[in-house]
Image (cartoon, rainbow, N blue to C red):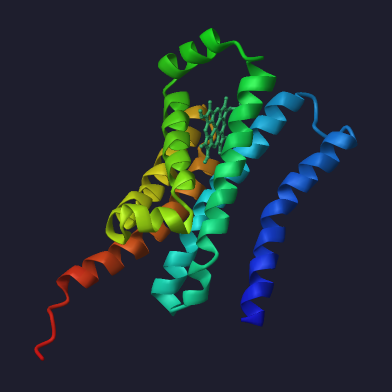
Length: 201
Ligand code: HEM
């Protein structure tokens, strides 16, 4: 129990650190020649990293039986949502200056923005139903099905990144590879469970 709490705080600190660092960079004139682009991209990067990290506890549980890791899932997922909201806010406020017509034109014209928007929509739904009461209200089965949407969100976020990048696809490919491993572990466990015949009593 004590160790569990230390791990929780360590993960909390690790996920808060990038935001604190961004604050340091902003305060010390360290955002480079194009600060708006820097901030938007930085927050997008951390939204995607946190989203992939939110899938890791399930994989660790399947592979090594680390049930404790599953308790971190909610906090890490909410961090991914928070970074995504900050990333989108940076785009809406700093990049587009609340020009809703231009934003709408972007959503329709640029498929990477459409994918980003779909990701945020899914993450919002998951964040809104992340509290214990939602599990009771929806029923455990429906809640579980709904929260499998996190894999769709991760897939869309990787597409958003890949479609945004014009030349060097190394970054998107690395993130997609991590997602492929995490999704692969989840699917393998799912298939194994389905194929395992019921033991005769
Ligand atoms: C309405 C939703 C979204 C919008 C409008 C949006 C917008 C953008 C824009 C404009 C950029 C390019 C920044 C630039 O070059 O100046 C970008 C990059 C990026 N976004 Fe989003 N985004 C959205 C959702 C998301 C979500 C939900 C994630 C992850 C969970 C995400 C992850 C990223 C990543 C990883 C990059 C690339 C950063 C880099 O180049 O290092 N975005 N996004």
